[in-house]
Image (cartoon, rainbow, N blue to C red; front, side, top):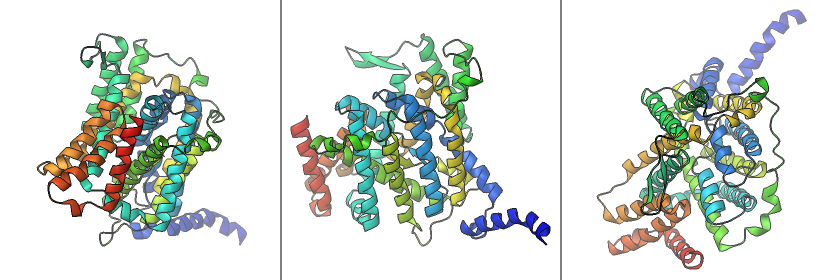
Length: 450
């Protein structure tokens, strides 16, 4: 009797998993979910190398950041899968890592340890507001043109950083910036990577950004611009220690009680909040999960995201967000949280490939930053530029981010000018009181900090 039961056990486990994730109701199966999860991983695996390189500019240990990036992707993606049953993976967000490194640490002179404390607080605030239901009030208070402008502005900021780190754009005393030396080997490598990545994206190749980085790194090794791994030990190794960054958010918690850090925390929260909400709606709609114009289990998804942000700050990385690249997995058939869990498990496996950080240099990651910038800039289409009361604050939000090298400054300009143009148009009553309050806050930010 027992020998007859043993062959059925795996099937029973599979059925239990299928019931938990509602495979039948969602029209999917384990094989499809596995392929979808793997597809999502390759679509967003570039963050494993871009994030450490970005935060290293802020003085953080790249090996520790690599470990924290992979671990929080595991935690966030698995939590999303189990708690919300959505095929959405999470990892440290592009844009927010740039804001962390270049605006907060380098621009404002805030130590990276204190900045991590700010990420922790923003995650806790996100969690409380999600649990209390206040999040809808905040979402409704901020006009759609400003939400779209923030996304597009961050895209331009990221692209500008990519052009700079790739040597394509350089400083110039006469004109502030100018074209770099295209005859230099590393700059040519970045241009090559941009061309390859653009071709792969245009052809609709899943994981185009990641594979573009791999091809660029190979080209760099062929032409002697990147060191060639001399053995298996320079490709695979034990996971790097996260000791240099772990827990630093707690040790510097007493340093966040300043007006400057209040603006930083607000920006962390604001961008994470709308990034996640936008990704959730977009991916859920693509997967056919939206019912009666509502996103089921949205609160659980937001709790998963905020939990990952808190975990990431403790481990030692910038704000964690839901990735729009999850749409690649949905296109491959992913419909349930199992897709996110599989993606998370692949990130866990990636922990053993940290030596490749020596191969994935700035010219290799620069094209990824530029391509992500292109994708984020598409939000400009959703702004009504014919209405000047929207156009001015939206434009200032977008343009001031790259020109001042600060996401927070771009947001501040947009939020300051929106009430002004709306009042001038005779639409003062349409501006939410929260927007007036935030405008006054940003005005104080400029007066006392700039």
